[in-house]
Image 1 (spheres, rainbow, N blue to C red):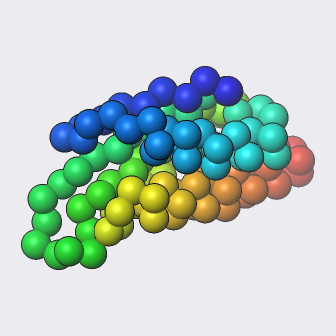
Image 2: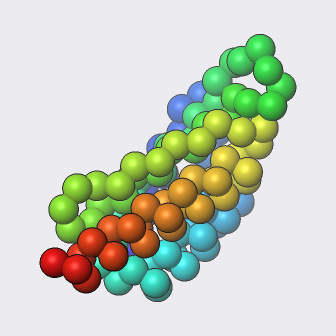
Length: 100
């Protein structure tokens, strides 16, 4: 699977890329029809200290692309929440694919 990382108002981080790649490759092992992933890591100024680190992931797969976004205190939590949401959406998509 091809994973592209895009940073907005954040400097590139090898550690975050490795963490994200590891989580996304687990999804790839489970759902072999995933083609590509676009990962956007953004930092946003907010009034709440509990938010501001945004992770958006778009998965290219047969049919419509799957998109998820999360806004958390740190990037690790945002990535984990986004990947968990992707897992749920991919499972739904797989169920639809097997019923047709």
